[in-house]
Image (cartoon, rainbow, N blue to C red; front, top):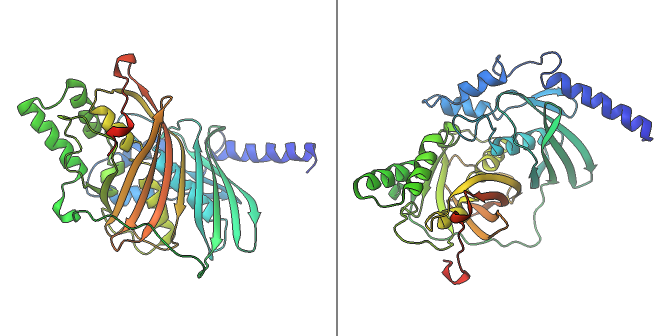
Length: 364
């Protein structure tokens, strides 16, 4: 398009975004309430939470290539910042809506540019970059009050078979029936500390913060049972190791491939950085800020389910410059590699005294 036409088209899109993001007019609400009211509803921790939370994965169609979410979930209790995993999942949902049913996402590359708020709607603008014979490419921007919070590029492919095949072998680990949940381990570690003073005050404060400030956004969506049942034991310094956990949705969400991919994207943003952070916590490191910078996903199989137990494996390869890089893999219980992810996050220390270095030879 000529520059003048391009500018007019951009202006038209921008006006549409302003209308549906709440500055002008009112669009249909998913929960028939404001974004702020929905955020409070989604923060309630009760037995109905799983059903409410899965509704928050939905988005409404405003126009061609334009979608909106008015039901956003917090990443932390008492803070208005939206959980990044939900933005990833909703962006995937918006892009999926613009391709044929015969095409499934195989890769997704995301950048978090600015923290969003649960009190305002988020608009998703999809750019149909390419429509090929086998592949489709989409770029999605998440916009709130006229500002871009997040961008992602997603590639879709028609299902194919044959050719090369191989896969990473799933490690042998104890079954989930023998393991306590993440939250139960947190409670157990804090109760033990009250009796025996097993950690520093700062370490105890961090665990208390995780227990008290983690919203139902997580434990009401999926169960999380770490294989390392001593992950919160800071009596000895820890090396950099692979962390493994069994995960499963709290309630079955059914054989809906697009929703199951959203769930995988949602889960993948929750614990990658922890693989690098926890060993440093055992050495006195105190974070003042943890924020996802970028996140990538690869869907190796078009159909899978998190309604059954899956093994989540996370590890950190590098930390430096106040950034931490990690990788994740999700296996089915049968040993099939379903999803891979990589992530880099900003992890700033609380003052110079909390700096921590782990030597290569101390890795696990």
